[in-house]
Image 1 (cartoon, helix red, strand yellow):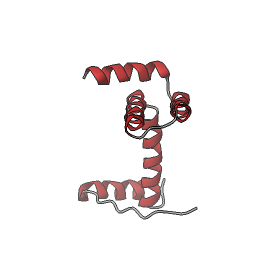
Image 2 (image 1 turned 45 degrees about the vertical axis):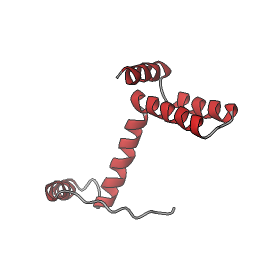
Image 3 (image 1 turned 120 degrees about the vertical axis):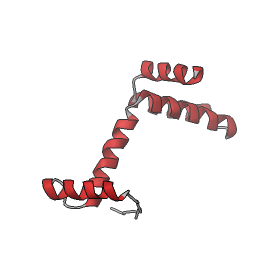
Image 4 (image 1 turned 90 degrees about the vertical axis):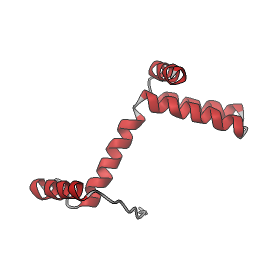
Amino acid sequence: MKYANVSVKFPTELDRELEQFLEETGVYTNKSEFIKESVRRHLIELNDEPAIAALRVEQLLARAEQEPVSDDELHARLDDLRQRVDEEGVSDSVETARSE
């Protein structure tokens, strides 16, 4: 597996809290493991959000207007998004976002 180097700057207090958590629990052996797991969990959480799915649909449609995509490709991308989220929740989120 290939890895990318990512530099993250934390406020000193947050770094202290993380160090203390790691020291007290031993759940993770180092900050890198903790951060990778945190990012994974947060991405899973965000990908389950109807508002994020609605945003993706809006972005996909906006890109399709700027960069013509075949109908088949557009439908394939939309179908992929539909499989990942509750369609009713997405529709409600799209309507809410449009009204705001």
